[in-house]
Length: 189
Image 1 (cartoon, rainbow, N blue to C red):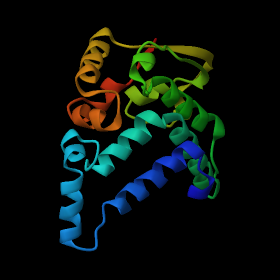
Image 2: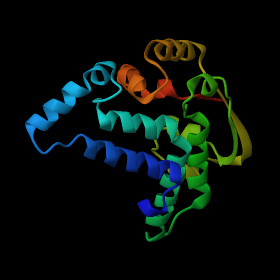
Image 3: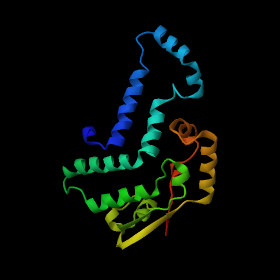
Image 4: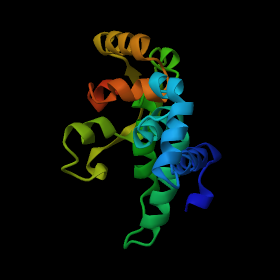
């Protein structure tokens, strides 16, 4: 379904493929010659970084909403063919939850935004319960949930971003030092 992906998501994939191909050389000598010509850029990290890590950061933090939109479309397509189809309301509840809790770049803006979403499911309770019961078991009267950013996590992330930068290679330098839950807003009960 990649041909149906939102332009921002497709660009992440296209750029990854292009940069991967740009790093292929016909000989060892050609590679060494290129590295010598671009030594300064390799030292600063502008070139030569871990492309899988870089583009994972771009997809996760820079094209977040396009990635979630595409994931939702892919799931609808895949589950449509399964017995029972797809419960669009449940899928929407989960995707809206992710859109609300996930931080995105630029982080200075994302860390102060407090998204809300309205849903007939308590997705947070489902998550806390370890997904042990179907989401339908967490049906509630429709309500609006709000989010907040833990002040300690916010300060930690602001410090890391001040040190490493708010760009894919900078994020890649501290991504492995934090837990994914630290890069999310909390749901206010």
